[in-house]
Structures are given as C-alpha cells and as structure tokens.
Amino acid sequence: MEASFYYDLDEIVEAQRSRFTSSPQIKGIFLLGILFSIGDAILEYTVGVQREKYVEPWVVPSTIAGIFIGIGILLYFFAPKLDFNINHLWKRKFTIKILPESIDQFCEGTDFIVRYKWENFSSYIEITRSFILYFDTPQAFLIIPKRIFDSEKTRAEFIKKLKALILQKST
Image (cartoon, rainbow, N blue to C red; front, top):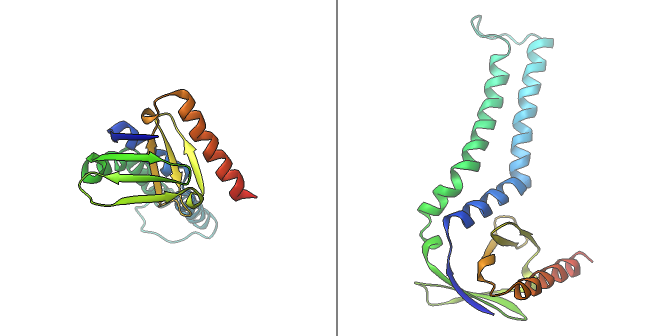
C-alpha cells in the first residue's frame, strides 16, 4: 500500500498530547514536583522551617505544586500546536509505502527515503486519528494518519501486523 498526505494540525496535536500523557519521563517529573511540594509542606508543619515572617506556611508548597501543574498545562495545551506551527516538516507532503518488510517514508523536499524495518518498532498506540509507532525510545516515533488507509480491511491488516510484531517482541 502506498499513500501520499499532508499532516493536519488536529492529527499532530492529538498524537503529541497522547505521547505527552503516556511518557514515563513526564509522569516522573510531575511526581517529583508533587513529592517535593508535599515534603516541603511536611517540613514546614513538623520541623517549622523558618521563612520570612510575612509568608504563610502554605505558600511555598502551593507555589511549587502550582509551577509544576502550570508547566504541565502549558505543555499539554500549547506545545503541540506550537510544534506544528514551528516545525516546517509537519507541513510537507509525505509518501508512505507499507511493505511486508518495512515502512518506507519519503518527505517532499528531500532526496532520500527513510526505511523503517518492522522489527525496529517496539510498540504502538492507536488513537482517534492516527497510529503512533515507537522505536526503542519514546522520543523516536512515526505518526501514521488513519485516513491514508483506503479501506477498513487495509487498516485491519495493518493493525494485525502491528499486534503480531509487538507480540513477537514481547516473547
């Protein structure tokens, strides 16, 4: 199967948000931030960490938690749109060829084909508008829009191939 397409904003935003919420690194950073806030609050109330006289005991832990939550909200809602608008590659025409041994990708404006061998994918996520195929690291991924599949049968065969690949890697 071969298909040419342009990514649209909604596909990229949904995929980037899905990557964000499933990232163990992001979850770890937020957990550390919350634990630090709780730890600071415990120290404040048990040991009585001295702060400026005009700062209430709840201000510092609440501020730390607010910073972490605020950064998370900014990253979730604004970063994917900003990425789409700044990264010129998202606006180029892509051609993907799904072959028995690989997925070949060609990007308009380049003179080479990137070949992704099936065995190099480690996992995938199916979301509303696309598939996100991951390599061994969450930072390396390929987004394939669902709209490129010409039929439900073709999409089902693609999913079957992905599931067989992941099952094979896990055994």
